[in-house]
Image (cartoon, rainbow, N blue to C red; front, side):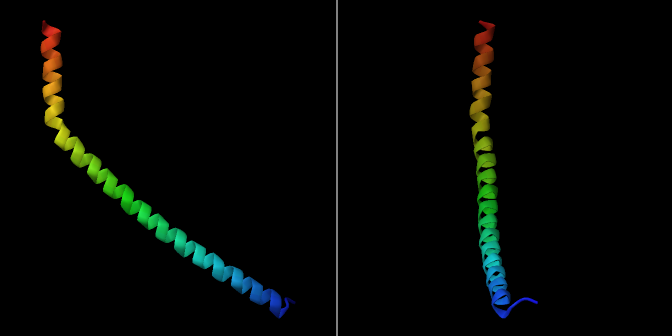
Length: 66
C-alpha cells in the first residue's frame, strides 16, 4: 500500500501537470489566434496587390510583343 507521503507527492505532481497543461492550452489558443490573424492579413494584402500584379503582367506581355 502507498504511504501518505507518496500519495501527497502524486497529488502535487498531478496538480503541477494540470497547471502546465492549462498554460500550454492558453499558449496554443494565443498562437492559433495569431495564425488566424496573420492568414487574414495575408489575404487582405493579396487582394490589395492584385491590381499591381495585373498591371505588372500587362507590362511584361507588352514587352514580350516588342
